[in-house]
Structure formats: C-alpha cells, structure tokens
Length: 461
Image 1 (cartoon, one colour):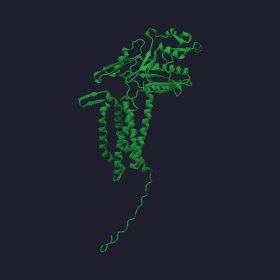
Image 2 (cartoon, one colour; image 1 turned 60 degrees about the vertical axis):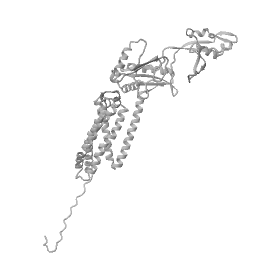
Image 3 (spheres, rainbow, N blue to C red; image 1 turned 135 degrees about the vertical axis):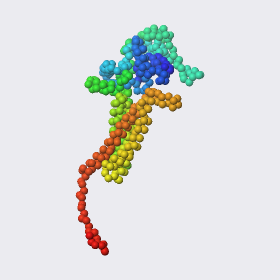
C-alpha cells in the first residue's frame, strides 16, 4: 500500500451508501508492478475481516467517472408503506439466494428505537409553561442548545456556542429531573412531557410522491452483472409483485441502457450520412448498399471474435469500436467498386472487369488492413512500450481501457476484409447475371451485302 486513510463517526447519508456506516478505510495501492493484483488484495481483505463479530465489511473499488453505486440496484416504489416493506423483504430474499452476489443491502430501517416526546399542551397551559422552553430542555439533554455564534479573528467561518450538560448527566432520564420556571414556581418538566419508544423509521425517500425502497448488491469477480439482471427480470415476470408496487432497475443497468440508446442512434445517423454521400457520388443505390453491407459483415466479425477469446461485449468501448470500424471498412469497398466502374468501360465482359479489379486492388486493400491490425495489436494484447525508460510491460492498468475498442476493430476489420474480397465481387457478378437473365435479348439484324461499284479500266468481278 502507498497510503491508508481511516475515517469514522457520523457520515452524511448518500443515496449510493448504506445508512449504518461507522467507518471507512481508504487504501491507495502502489504501482501495479510492485504489488499483487487488485483482485487478490480485495479477496485477502475479505478473508481477514470475515471473523469480525457484528461488523460487516464491504470491499469496493473506486469507480471511474460519475459514481453509480453497486452494479445491481432495484428500486421499489409504492404509496402503501406496508406493501413496500413486504416487497423489499421479498426481493432481498431473492438476491440472498443468488450465487455470486456479495454485499447485499436494502433500505429498511436499521433495527432500533427512537424516542418520541409529546407535550401535554392543556397541562402546560395551566402553569403557563412555554412549549419552546420544553424543546430547549430536550436539546440540553441530547445534542446541546445553541446559544449564539462567534467568529474568531483568524477564521472566516463562525463557530457555534452550544450549551450542553456534562456527559454523566447527558441522558434521556435527565429530562424528568429538570424543572421549568413558570409563574407558579419551578415545575418538573416530566409533568408536561411524556416520552415513548417507537421503532426507528430511518430515512424516508420519495420519488414523484411515492415512497421508495431499494435493494442493492455487488457482483463477485468473474461474473457479469447483465446476466444477473436478466435472471432477475425473468424472476419478476414469473412472480410479479403485488398491485401498487413497481420495480425498476437502476445503477449500472440504467447507465448501460442510456449508453445503448445513444450508441444506436449514433450508429444509425452515421450509416444514414454515409449512405447519402455514397448515393450522391456513385449515383447507384446498389453500389451504396453493397458498400454499407460491409459494415454488417464487420459487426458479425466483432461478435465472432469476442466469442473466440471469451470476452464480453462492452456497450461503450466495443460500441464505439463498431462505429469507428464502419468508417474503416467502407473504404475497402469504395476502392473496389470505384475501380470496377472504371475498368468496366474498357473490359470485354463484367467478369473480366471483376478479375482485373481484384488483381489491381488486392495489395492496397491488404496493406490497409494489415497495417491497421498490426498497429492495434499492442493495445489488444495489453502490451505497453515505454520508450523513455525502455521498458516493456504486459497487462498494465492503463492498457485495460482500450482492450475492447481495439479488439472490436481488429477482429471486425480482418473478418470484413476477407469477406469483402469474396462477397463484393460475387455481388457484382450476380447483378450482371440477373441483368442478362431478365433483360430481353436484342433481335439480330442481317444486312445483305452491297454490290461493289465497278472501277473504270478494271474488269468486273
């Protein structure tokens, strides 16, 4: 470890954190080549703290970007509080039964009591006792009564001046011993105030006027949160909640859906703009379709490549890789079709033009593909070359960001290029075959030979 920072006490309650946090230990790791992998360190922390009685230890890694909390988050909403608590218990039991989920928590109130003070206004009015004074007495025996504030000369912020009882007298029972000064003398405060113990209500959360509760969980190493979410969706469909209770997935699943919607729109807009440019330049819908068909082949290549290396499809990085790949792949088809259109004018048949196009453009297409793949291979294999220190490292944390992006481009480009060199010529030949099959053949006209005029001085033949 490079540094360890410990904090404890009362923490401000945040939506992505539990209410019963009593302490935090923030650990900063050393450089990755000087320590064990982070997964091993986190597993070691869990093992060493598993025997702490009454203490729940959650090991969480710092999130990149805006924090979204735990990957599995289910928000339950209802106007009936009783139905909401019952639904939270039901979902919590389901999450506890799923293997691979750790650090499961819910928003039910922490077990405990809270004291509720009731002032008998009729009894207080008999003695002309002020209810505000009774409230000040309650503050004296608990957190303290703020009298004034003071700003020191060497500070820009004010300091509260609070009156509190000594610690040995700072208890709820002390309220019965306090006397309130009234017009009829000093009367015990217990004559006007009664206290009762009530179950702890915790923090009340509302969205659009409805009470909400949540159930959250973290996922063990090696498991995909998306698979767990799919299992939970199927469970909700098979066992729907009671009427008036609604469930909604939040956290990582919500961010993933928003990213998916954005990338789908961006991909559609990119294809639409490319289609307009291609139709304008080639003046042919078939050529534009044939060029954009390579994008579909490249996407299939991305999915096949990820399946081969057993790597998940990342919505953000892999999605951006597919969009960037579309701009690279169409170039190969543009080169082929543009050359074919020029050679078709000087070739005897379409087949001859296709063969000449493949012979002339094989090397440029392969050079473009091979150089791009070789340039991205270090990122795909997580190889980091430091030219300053002349060192070579594999698996550095900085290289993990770009693995999905580079992997999508490498596999998609290789697969699409191989198919482009085969499928595109086949499509061009198929179009010519269809034209010749359905186009009516022209009637051949035979012309009679004309007589050759006789030349003077020569015998006629």
